[in-house]
Length: 124
Image 1: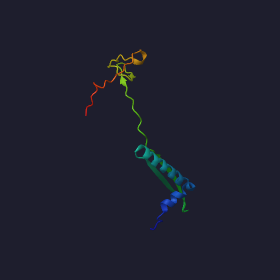
Image 2 (image 1 turned 120 degrees about the horizontal axis):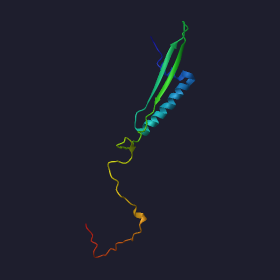
Image 3 (image 1 turned 45 degrees about the horizontal axis):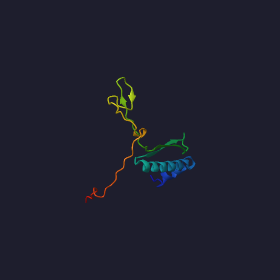
Image 4 (image 1 turned 90 degrees about the vertical axis):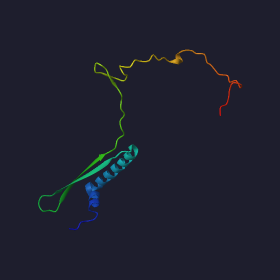
């Protein structure tokens, strides 16, 4: 039984007046760009359902469905610590806080180093 060599391409170009082919091209372009940006795999699936008309009319109803799966960037993670009473917090409840203070709040004398030519030695 002979078939057209371009039957698939011709049929896809005719689905819904060419809108399916346009949709596939647009989505394929989106997938290529997303794959380039993320370095991950994307996919596009075309499903064509062929249903013969009742009786011996030689007519067929074609329904298409396009499914696009774009690759996604990995979502960030947040590290949290569980407390003894079952809550979550950003700081470790088992670790004491250091008594840090801002050094900009206190006035300090500015110190400078005067270089003495006799005490500076060049190391080679």
